[in-house]
Image 1 (cartoon, rainbow over the protein chains, first blue to last red):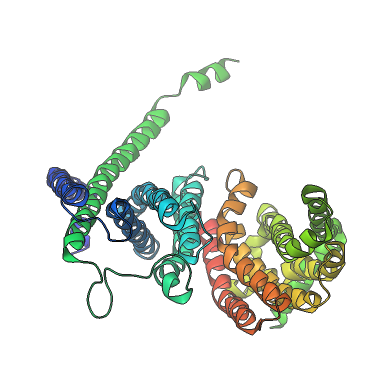
Image 2 (cartoon, each protein chain N blue to C red):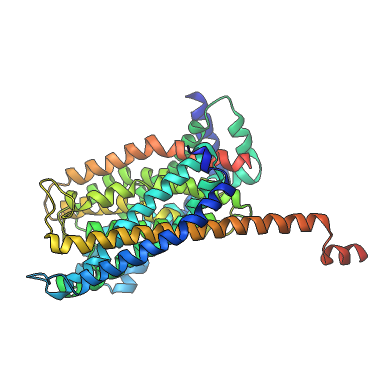
Length: 252
Length: 222
């Protein structure tokens, strides 16, 4: 099953077919989610209208974790089975995850100002998400730090796996350390603590963000594969005909 | 075991003969801490309040400074490949090099720390716990740093990249090292923080040599 889609050509065909569906799903889900979230759901009895930041903040935070899990998963596949597509998927996932993390941090900060009275606190959840952001940046920097792209991919894969220890820490940080950030309320023992009228737009936004991720991921993977093709074509061109620099060197 | 000790001895000899490395790390540590009284003013209360944090952060940066040389020199002159070809697992070699790194940088930092605690006007009750946290924490720093050092071998702009990779992973060690000291100064039990610090050390000791060896293998393969 895995090997059937391992072939980049077959994958490209599949990706091209899936891409418009993903785009449509993203558009519909985000439109409904934003409509219900911003206009057709009640304000909070304590937080008032600013509770609506939740509909962007919570899905971004979910996606930050989901993207890192996907990143670590593809890195593990690429290290273990040397799967060429896994490398490409990991490299394509990292910037998306980094932006979701950034979005979660910024919206959280905007929400924190009216609710907690401060833009930022050194709370366990906030700090661990900030570390996640740095891990994304480190992954991307290491990926680009080598002249040989294969070396960069292998080194950064190891780093991504090491950084995965942070994901459970983020998930459980609100339970282990009792600080300002509230504990999990959507998924917990004894049912969700959120009223259905707010839960529904939140879940719509969650699905919308996830399909957005897959949509952009497909675009980025196709772009990466094309870039690899261009690189190998250029290399072949260079090998076949000596460039102008080489000729002038020979002449001198 | 004797091979492991052999590598430790070799690295210690190299560090002692080339001399300057450990002294430079300690000098950086002292100078970095001494900058703070100039930066925040010589008010004794303020200095006492920030002393634990400043000493820990400076120790962390100092131990990171020397990380780049952990594998770099051996990689450049090719001896790393010979070390990898030994009939002993590369994990042991990496562990030995980490031990040597800690002996040449971590230990001198711990020796210098009480002097800096005096300069920073730290309360006398904090001295012992400062040493204990540094003893538990600096080996973890060397272990985690070895991963970064192995991953950045042969990369462009290795030093800056190394700090970008390693510093986020250092944060838990820093947090629990400082909370242990602050708890003692506030006359609260420091034991839970010390246990977590020890747990981090044990986990890092179990995992980091493997990751470092994997990183070195992929460097030598290509």
